Image (cartoon, rainbow, N blue to C red; front, side, top):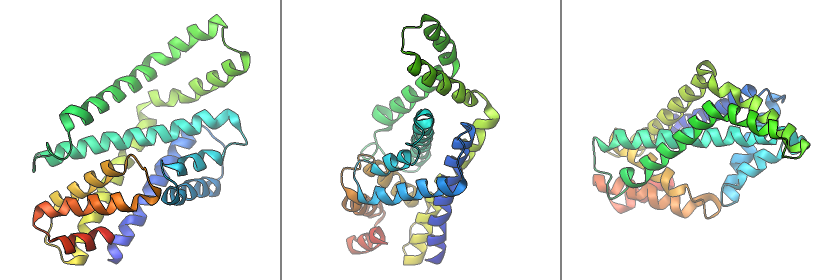
Length: 246
């Protein structure tokens, strides 16, 4: 169990490190201690508030400087986008082992969603600056808003540099690998005869099930989806509930 706890902590550290990289890429001047507080207080508040309220708390740490708020919001949006991509890839990998048609509609929902998000992001990265130049030359927005948006567009140009983007992608792969491994370690600590496929199904079902975040902590939905993910592998209901609680 100690290894499972260490794996959880490692996953949190990797998520924090990924966000710090995005913040630094936007040249946001902030101490590591402040970023640490913002991130982990936000994570803690997510346990209390529904609808991912902790992300608003993370943004609120930078409310004293409105100029960088769009940058902070964008760093969080990039996080979520990379996680959706990772979720889709994990679903595809898992579909080679078990059928996900009745569990996760990859073809009907997840793949189209991921595709649309990727097209929009790439279009914004490739053509956004040119479009913005035309908008800025028109002078039809208030000057303050023009300056605000201009700064954000210029700060976002790092997304066109593969060397700056790659660390975030690599960390996302590591994060999801660690989360997948955490389930394996919990299986082992509880003596459950489950392998990598079951660990992947737990990861996917819990992640998808908690996306709405309709209740504080998602305790009920978390238990439900974690339990449902192991039952198809022959785990009795009582043992499945124990696993979900752990």
